[in-house]
Length: 326
Image 1: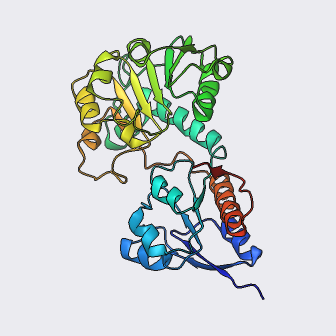
Image 2: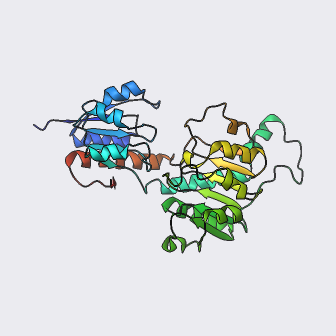
Image 3: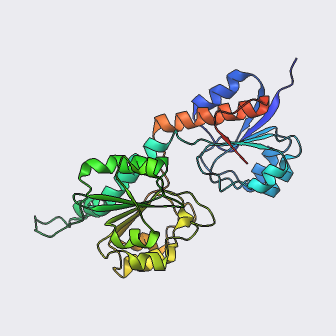
């Protein structure tokens, strides 16, 4: 009889993913059965002796975790498209394979990005509060006015799968022009939007809306900073649904508070969750969401199934549906 391989799951995951693992009948599954983050001590204890680890974006899988797991760990499957929480160099040295969940959250994240852009530019949260607190006295010509997409210029930082999907959804609003920046021109990606590749500075200067959808790396860490915001229009709206660390939040606060830019919408922050006393939360022109880009039932279910199948493939020594090439 084949011995079951130990698998540790760091958070309660959708039942569809758990069912895939259970039905495979090759795993001895232990799960941190909570929506709350697993305490570090419990993570180190739970991963000990594991052959497979299924984690999420907020779990820092570093040398300490790898040492606690021991030599039997052969696969890490992360329920995310991002992987900056994984110590990839240490993982590679140990010959551990990594699975992740790209593509499946593209549409959901693009939808959320557009919703956040509209909510920020047209001041939805502020307007709702005015209704609730009695600020809605009568109709007035300039009360609660915001900025519209029609005839605007939209700058997308990172024209990958999600960046393209965002542009595709914004185009029917009557956007006049799309700009994009990144490591290099991507004409095959830009063709549908007729987007123009420009340096980051030019994108900041000319865009009415700036949408960040790039990955986090050494080049993009802190990229949207004081210098970047100083080049933006005073009427421009800034939206980030990529990674919190792409933005220098202190510089963003100053730009918003001083009126250097009109408004900002964030679905990602540093840290997460953002402390309730953070200065950004005092601003009416800053809309912050709790990292819900992929939060549709269908998307999270699909992510959990893909993560489970990646894990199983790693345990069996088979090709993964979505393996990160280290």
